Image 1 (tube, rainbow, N blue to C red):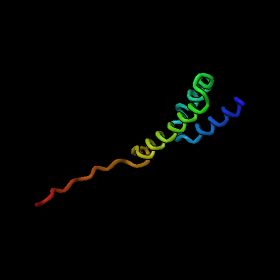
Image 2: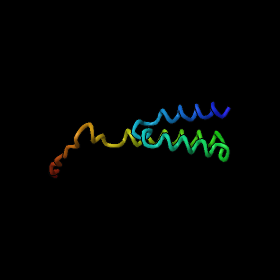
Image 3: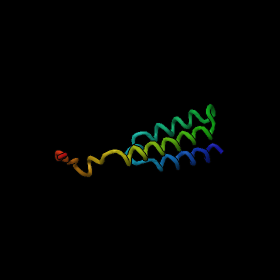
Image 4: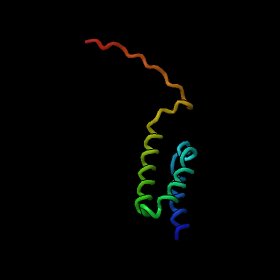
Length: 80
């Protein structure tokens, strides 16, 4: 049964954005193994799902500097 839990957790990890996954997935998988008996499956899956939402939110909202340069926008004076 533990192998099924591990597989389920790894599926959630694979849904994270690639930059986050490449940096943290291994460490998160180790934490899962160490914490399963202490915190239980439901809590760890909830934590991974929250992480998934936070990371995609941060990934989508972050400026994509490597793809497109940031251009300065000149603000025109507002006449009254």
